[in-house]
Length: 294
Image 1 (cartoon, helix red, strand yellow):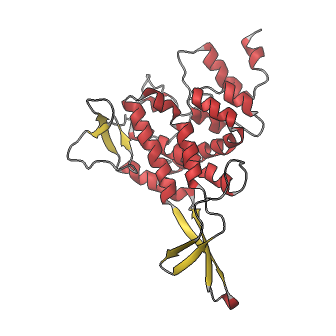
Image 2 (cartoon, rainbow, N blue to C red):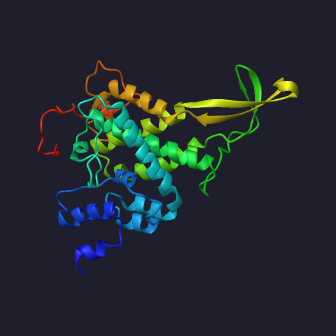
Image 3 (spheres, rainbow, N blue to C red):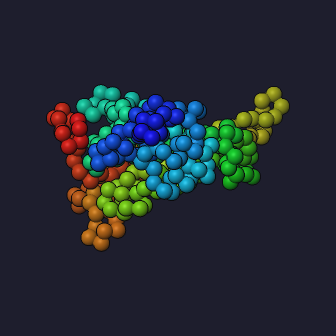
């Protein structure tokens, strides 16, 4: 059977990329980001989990175990791409994607630059956001509202009762970490440590941008009793926050022990878990680079 015949049942966009992978295995590489380019409503989870290029073993297993989560996961990846392109629309590098490329952003992401740091952070944040939202809307069987928000709480206006449906960011962050970090945890080199740090910064950004929403109860709106819940804020605010972190990103290198990262410039402050880090200076995106194909 010819290669074309084997791929014929697959959607066009996936068929085109898989053909490149089969014909030129040494010239292409894949990442889970490619999920953002697929129409998961028409593509079965079984086909996705077994054939999408770029997924490592743990990611394929999670995909098979939780096929319903792949839909919001793909949506979150798309949100990350859209926000990246919005915030970099006036930059030399404008977060452009490469059509029919299993890596989505092309080989430019092989460089450990500030831009790569932002892409990893915003993609991680997008997946957390979309999965959490799906939990709150009752679209997923394994999660719902945040179960830890019970009893009473207090803010500057006084005491309130937890109620409504607080967004379960904890679940979204947990699944995002298990799925997205899987590939990096297999390698543990300098680039993997950089990616893990920026993935975590993206997750923490979603947690940071939550707000308390309340509903008053009482006679004639007296608000003698308040019911409150924690809700995520607009994703654009999360992206804007990460863009600021991109502007102040810290250059790092691996320690001699090879188990951690340290600041290159000792006069620069040590990055927190919410900061972005990068390994090498950004290239001049106005100069063609045949190595990365740009």
